[in-house]
Length: 310
Ligand code: NAD
Ligand code: UDP
Image (cartoon, rainbow, N blue to C red; front, side):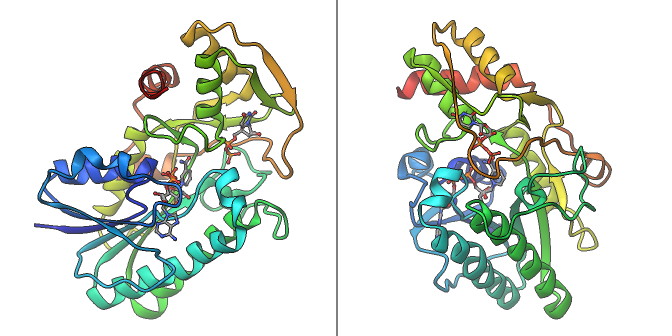
């Protein structure tokens, strides 16, 4: 039986990944300090004898005998990662080092949940893996962007220096059930506002773009990446190339929720990227992967979830 460690397993993406790994017959160890995740996200898995949860902060060393590690621990929404930027940087640096050290000792394969944020405010569009990005090193998003970039460096150096079996994926904006309702991310914000009949907050003029992937598509890509041979380490983009402005997203959500909410315009946060869209040629070629869930379908499932919890 494959023993799999998922850091950040009680978070939005991590909980879906744990569910998937259990369904494949893995023995899953979820390590989380509940900073942005929640026990509620994994409560339904606790009856499974092959699922364990450990409360632990990954900036401290952790030891367990495992075969694979998915390293997801890190606050991911701008509100959360800017709340304690020094801790955010520590999670990416010390958290990654601790997990890479564990992978080195146990000879486990380790996958890093990196991000499209490594491209910053990109001048190459769509973003290909070979693009080095356009990142402000001293801004309010830097603790996350530069933290994730440094984590990629650590992964590459553990690979080159110690032969650790690494995998790096760059995740583009992901949404779905179990997003936290107050993490400030655009999909959860708009859906909650629309369902409550509150004003929908568009930052800037709403012409900035993002590409949204449904969480099930991401989990499929993550598992496929982990299962590739040792010769493919990435980085590889995992995202949905469908590109939408925030105005288009708001209008779609108003339509699907039949909401009476109005749009209000608020200042654009500092260093907010203008555009983002993955080039997924590499994922198609190496993982035989591409997203399946269209934005409208994924939004409907997510709206259903928020209707239940609100
Ligand atoms: P999330 O906030 O729901 O999950 C992060 C999890 O990590 C939470 O359960 C949190 O409690 C845990 N955590 C944070 N600090 C920790 C620490 N020091 N020790 C142990 N656990 C800790 O966010 P998510 O959207 O599920 O993101 C998961 C991962 O995917 C993150 O690494 C994130 O950077 C990456 N990612 C997400 C997206 C996205 O759109 N959701 C995009 C790109 C990358
Ligand atoms: N955004 C918005 N209204 C909101 C929340 C976010 O217009 O209530 C915008 C935000 O400025 C950004 C985009 O939506 O341009 C995506 O924001 P999110 O925080 O979800 O992700 P990220 O900026 O990290 O891609």
